[in-house]
Amino acid sequence: FFPFEVTQEDIHTAVESTKALISDDPRSQILNAPKLSDQKKLWSMKLMSLLAPLVYLVNPGMVSLIGARMIQISFQHGVTQESAVALVSYGLTYISALNDIEEGYRWAKLALLIIDRFKAQSLYPKIYFLVNHFASIWKEPIQALVDGLRQTHRSALVVGDIEYASFASKAYVERSVFSGKRLSVIETECAALSLEMVQLNQIQSVLGHMGTHALVLELLGSQTRDPFNEYPGRINNCDDLIGYSLKNGRSILLRITYCNRLFAAYFFGRYDEAAELAQRYRNLSPYHAPTHDIFHTFYEGLTAFKLARTSEDSLRWMELGTKSVESYQDWVNHSSWNFKNKLSLLEAELYFCKGEIIKAKKKYEEAIEYSRRHNFVHEEGLSLELFGSFHEFFKNNDEYRKCMASARTCYEKWEAYGLLARDCFRCL
Image (tube, rainbow, N blue to C red):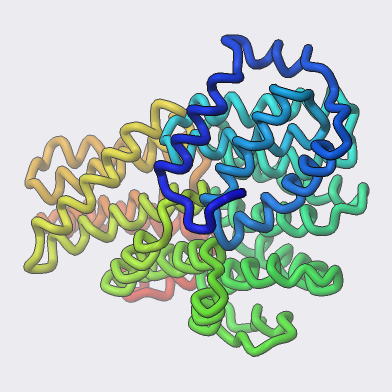
């Protein structure tokens, strides 16, 4: 029995009861545990394995309880190939509900041992996707994970797992955007993957994919294709997508859509809209959708610092922006590659707001350098643009033009022609 409304107390209780069954060396415990033979429990494991990903779409907190129960069965009665799903779910609990990234990553990675032990090749795409999507993003370079998701999509199709082929392709596109891959390449892939999802009748994946495709087209400045045409329903734009998600309780779809719109609103300078979208995202349940939490925190922080300089309620915006800085100060300890440039840019904006000019300048320069070194061309462009705004504020016109010209070059590499149509680039 699982409660429908899952609380933090429920999750902590489940984790504590599970810990009592785990040795100091869970890796050896998993490798040496007997195989589960009780037929009733085998079917229970299979059922929970199938339910967990579906439940996550509407009630993410429930997955923590399902994962804990599956772990308990595995350690008390024996392991089965479905124990791999249990390990990933348990790892997600540590990351999302307990804010323990290292422990969550360790548990999620153990799931791959189960796949090897049972030679469960048909489950490999599913487990690799879950590990990649929920755990690896916190530790491993995002560009490598993008390539892995593309391969997972192909592998899932080979073994006939069309559901996880669609999950992987949707995540692949999202990560491609957030890693700064060339937008024209992403757009071509978006169109092909949308058609594939519809042909495979993977409607929930299509819904999440459409909003990301719309973001790509907006950044490209392209009106040649309507991403909502592929959906056989009455969703014609992102507002319809949000309405559908609210009506049907699709919390994860709401996160994806709010995050995509926040990304666009910030880059295009619609800061009040960005602040509203960030607030809507925060109002959702506290259980994480890792990729989107990372980028929501980044763009909400940048939005807050911008509004702190331009609105009357500066103290509230400074407090909100500082929380984003604190999050990244924690996350950078787990992956300097993914988070260092973003932390430096947030700190630069913080120091700019506080009037600490020398520190701000140093942090802008760090953000530009780390973005370049870590191949985040879009964030290199953004760092240069914000550094340009910093110089413009202090009337350093030559430095302003130099930064904006360099930002333009980055956006051209990214192929974000929609951004280059803004007035700040037209006059260069």
